[in-house]
Length: 171
Image 1 (cartoon, rainbow, N blue to C red):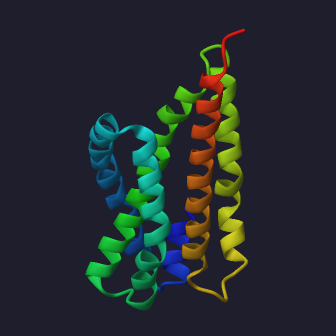
Image 2: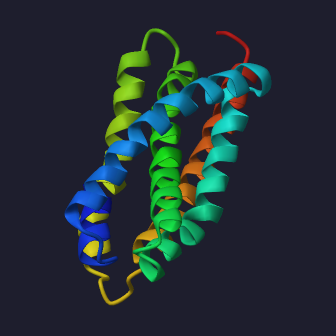
Image 3: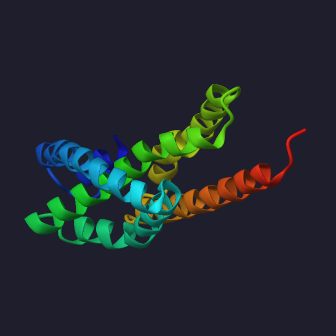
């Protein structure tokens, strides 16, 4: 992944350390799925996803900076790297059931496919975009801040459209 490449080439970590951090992220992200599910049942998935996206936007720079400025500090490497990837993976994995709720059953597959394909545009282009700004080593953090902000705007837009559709009388 790009994050592993950034850790090796920009932050100066060894490939083994970067790979170990990436592998440690998966159990953290899987464990957080249960917490997010419980919070979503209590407060609603939309509020939880917006909160997580806001947290990701606010925390992207504080998480990337220690990885770049203190690459040998075990605490900064593991806490920052695992936390960053855990947040991203949890937001992504929990967005799918949320999006399916927005589409009527007749077009749910097509609607979800459209959502997924639109989400892949910035996701697929992010390594290319971030690699073009290597002069700014923390550019991936800025990019994440923008992407998380777009995610919040998209979630709010979906909620407003969904509410407007529900308010319309059946024809």
